Length: 148
Image (cartoon, rainbow, N blue to C red; front, side, top):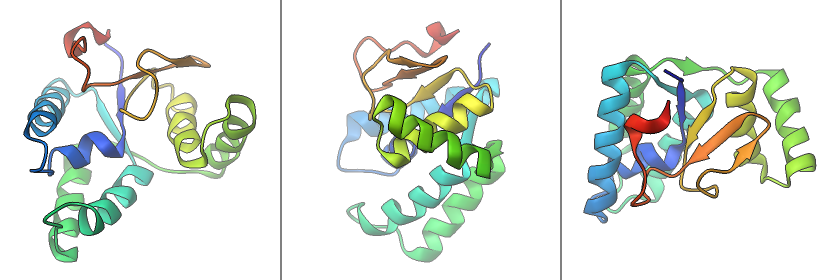
C-alpha cells in the first residue's frame, strides 16, 4: 500500500464544526490512515495547522490548544521535514507546473520522499504531477480503500 501525504485542509476540517459533512469525512479518512499506518504529515502542514486553527476556525483554537493538537498530530503521524532540496524542488514546481509556492512545497515533499498520493482539496482530483497523484477526499467518488 502506498503512503499518503495529508494536506493542511484535510487536518483542519477534522476540527471545523462549521461543515459537519467535511468534518466527518476528514475524521474518517484520518482515522483510517492512522489505523493502516499509511498517513504522513509534513512540517509545513503542522505549521499551517497552527496558523489556520488559531486564526480561521470559528470558534478558533487558543494558541495553547492548537499547540497541544499539533503535538498530538506529530505524535500520531510520521512527520516529513522540509529540507533545502524540497525548497528548491518546490521552486521548480512553481516554474514548471505553475503551482503556488506552498502547493509546490507540498508536491515537492511528496515527490522527494517517494509518497505517491497527496490528499488535498486544493488540486484537481486525480491530477498527476511527476509521479505524485492528488486526490480530493471530499468528492463523492473518493474511495480511500481504492487508493492503492
